[in-house]
Length: 397
Image 1 (cartoon, rainbow, N blue to C red):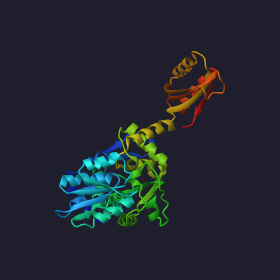
Image 2: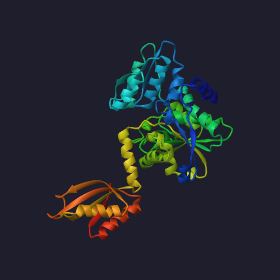
Image 3: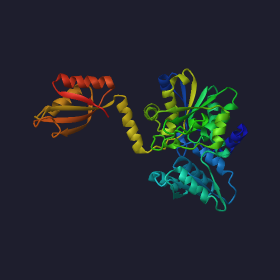
Image 4: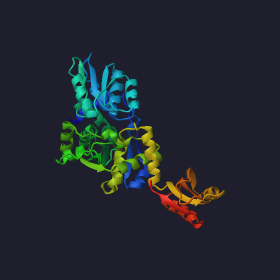
């Protein structure tokens, strides 16, 4: 892979993908102790960076050929959209358990969708079978030189927008994005380090580069876009050649980063899109006093997942709490609890009343959800209730 491949890709895809903004975040800079710049790839038409590599690869398709790909999400939408734009018939094989909204979105973008396999690896087997048919070309989601070159155009833009970046951080699944970034940064006048990020549940590339047995776990992760058990051969070689460091982050840090970006930057990212910021949370010393560019690589998060992550974030910050109060089952006692909480400048958002779970026949239990400023405020509310003679406790989530 050469820098010329990436500069040529930039020319080829110009106008078909968005030249996304790179903005300095003063608040995140203050929180992390670094100078933080955000590359908003979640603003691409399909909601992720994947359209760059897909477009560049599709431009190599022979006239009259169709293409086939396997994906559970962003690669599927990138191939479908740009295939439709270029008049190329696209078929996407997706796992049978792919959420309906992703299947529908891929179909709406112009692709024929076939559901096959329990996961992406099984879908890949089916896609390769179909690709044996005449006039069909297989487009790999990451282990393809043209795809890697397309993803590398992100670094060209970032270094044009902020030439003094010390580090560029991006999520790693199969490694296509980080590989493209590494090649582009290696050719930059000023040394710019690339750091990849994986979730602790799928550290497959970290394991590969450290020559240790794979420790990737089957199962769910909030960063499903980088839940890859087998990284690419080409991408592994490129990352090794350029000595790219892989940081493994916690699921908690990824969730916290999704919530931070939503609240501070007013932008929605998926788990993979938040992984770069999660690395700064889990490894602050690596980035202290550096100019750091974070690639927000995608924003295609399920709304229900986003809601859960947001509420968990509020709970972790002490801004959403559960309080249980046991009190005499007499008129006016519920009003007393409500008044005490209001006088303590907190807000009741939900009340569950249980007369059967109390310790006595003439007492009742209230399970309350309350909004507070932080953990300290929540404990002050608890103290006010106890000072009024009520049996009150904070409950864990």
